[in-house]
Length: 348
Image 1 (cartoon, rainbow, N blue to C red):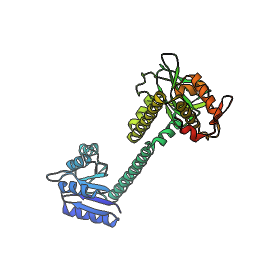
Image 2 (tube, rainbow, N blue to C red; image 1 turned 120 degrees about the vertical axis):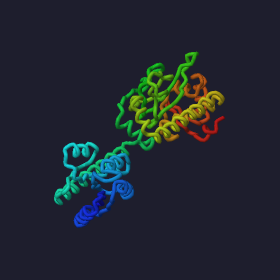
Image 3 (cartoon, one colour; image 1 turned 90 degrees about the vertical axis):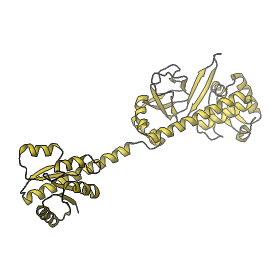
């Protein structure tokens, strides 16, 4: 049952109008003056308000102005009921936001028709607003998985052959990437011309984060270690999305922080571990990134293994030969298969 508030200082008219509406299956609340009407509107939040204009202390215009300024009552349909019939008075009421203007004495059919149409229109507006709010809620990203789905849906897919460069150090970092398939290494060349792998990235990893300032160049190169597919989104576009999704921004920050910690640990191992430990850890790491069972062969170049381990290719080759003799690994051409995972994990 819809609720209607009648604000009218004429007791007889107020009572008669209330009786008419109650007979038409409306719940009716009444107020004898404008000030009381404002209080009851905010207290009960009716479905529609009928209000006289000429009232002492607080007139109908002031009532409408007060209710329009309040977020809880601003969208309630509002009908003026007044003896004022001049065009400028009608126009003033409508310009202030009234939904209709009926003159006294009013026709019962006209009043009921106006009430019905205004409530119906208000309900349609409410339903539409709820649909829009629901749609906006759906469009908001809630977690990293939805961010990845956003990349899939909105990004531009690029394919790279094995050893093909995705971006080079010094290139402008206008794009951010999500790896769909394949394996990618990021790398730099040190002052001695030796390649150093700074990171390894597998499917569902993000790639290319430097800064959201598109003028900042990449500080490392990225190359596909095998046939690779990535999807890219412009940094400016993603920045706008993340500004509207603080939870996802925080999750992404945590993810990138974890990546930095992993890179730091890798660099520490490169700096202080023995050649045997570095080699064993690198073989295991490549197997994990390629999502291979430890007993399955991995195909990776000796140079990439050496660059990731931070050792000279010659030292790597000698160590691999030693591992093969001790039956820790099997080597067939350019492929390596782990035979004793536990021994490699315990290598010092």
